[in-house]
Length: 210
View 1 (cartoon, helix red, strand yellow):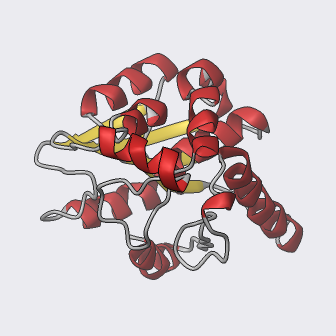
View 2 (view 1 turned 45 degrees about the vertical axis):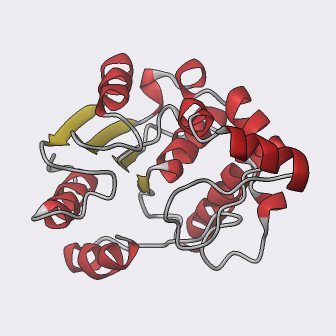
């Protein structure tokens, strides 16, 4: 998806900057850096760099799953001037999502190793620590976000087994977000025509055409 954004959005006159959260992708940080405040710090640091480099630009956000959760938390911690945020498969109930991973085996690993690895096909092994779990329960999105913080456009799959579509609907209804649902969509939203639709809708939204 990120590679597709870097190809498609510049063709519409939209610059793209992407980065890896701690313990994600090529980040040099291990599981000790996977903390909710640190992830928000990274997002805000990148944004501050962009604004310093190009103060005339309008900064918008494209965020997926956990990244959408962090983006919304950052907007609630450091409000901007109602920016546009496009959210793909947003993990709006992140604490409950991770709680489902706390199987008896995961709890045993937490006690024995100080972390557990969720049963999900991440590109990089994701190690969940007790500190990160405490962060998630502290940073509940529904209790922190408010409707006036941003203009939101959400896309979600009706067949998403990671973040149930009912949670996306509840968030959209609570906070006034625009929501489009792919009837056959799963969490990655990479099925037939889904990637193309997401890219087109995101570009139109950022350009004020949606």
